[in-house]
Length: 239
Ligand code: PGA
Image 1 (spheres, rainbow, N blue to C red):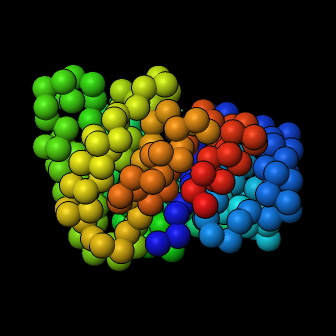
Image 2 (cartoon, rainbow, N blue to C red):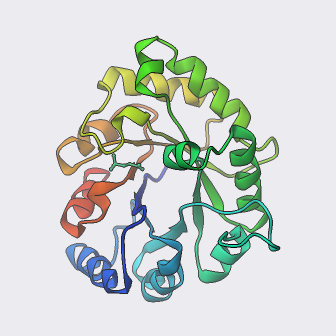
Image 3 (cartoon, rainbow, N blue to C red):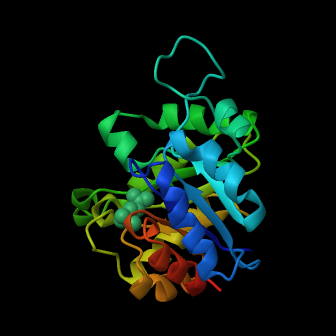
């Protein structure tokens, strides 16, 4: 399975950020490596620009969220069809920041993942437990329920990103054994042929060991994806 290294830029990036991706491609000597799929998910304002500029250089583009409907009276929202039209190939759905900030439920995440498939995008469905849930030993129960509720029944293509909420942006990561246990669990609950990404404080310094864990098929990278040198180092750690 080809590893997928996806950068989640969150609410960061302006038109000038094109230069950061140019720098990234420069660090790969002109095109991203064939053996790793490299994806950047910038704010929606940059999806079209990045897709136009970089599709020939092996850097794919994804959205960070989509509405479940294709069009309509939903001021401020963006549909999966619009992301696809702008050149996106993937869309992140159910990120913990959206589950927390916008109170997105598993049912909504499932509808968004279904919308992504309808538009021909691959949804990256995020799951992960909070710190108190892990402390209570409930991480498998929580992630199991999120998987059951968030994956559309008929989705033939999707990616799961396991992102423990307490590891996002904190510099903390689970032990490699804990990552292995969770990824084995997600594999058993889903399918053999889907990619399961780990996300949460992935950095150049820990990427290689995390990516070598069984059933870790790539990474969803937040903060470290904003700097070309760091993101390139993480991509290279997957080779
Ligand atoms: P982080 O974020 O790498 O900054 O911890 C990961 C994410 O939220 O996708």
